[in-house]
Length: 162
Image (tube, rainbow, N blue to C red):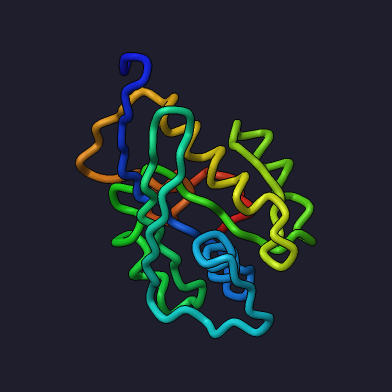
């Protein structure tokens, strides 16, 4: 724990995940540049952004990877997930199962709007705050993604995020 008045810096890789057209790029552009583009071009592969957020006497510098949602780029996704401290799953709010899924699995959930900027800064601040509070976990292999077809037991029930 840092002494009072000291300033600690933490780098944190954060990935944005979700289907094509859900607003991943719009969310990160609103957060990093304060901009909203009504008709955003689809991301090809992935895009990288960096943004720092201060939480009390600490600073979290996010290294944000905006991944492509198109099916043809899904094979590249594990490369971007590796070593991530956090992930934001961006989805269409008409999917009413998402909040239920988050609640049932103990996941942090917050609705945002890149268009109106509602909760955009708040979600990144909350993630930074939670990363600071979390115990450091060393996992050189990267994160294990539950629900990937190769990792599902044969008797597993279908999930909302296949």
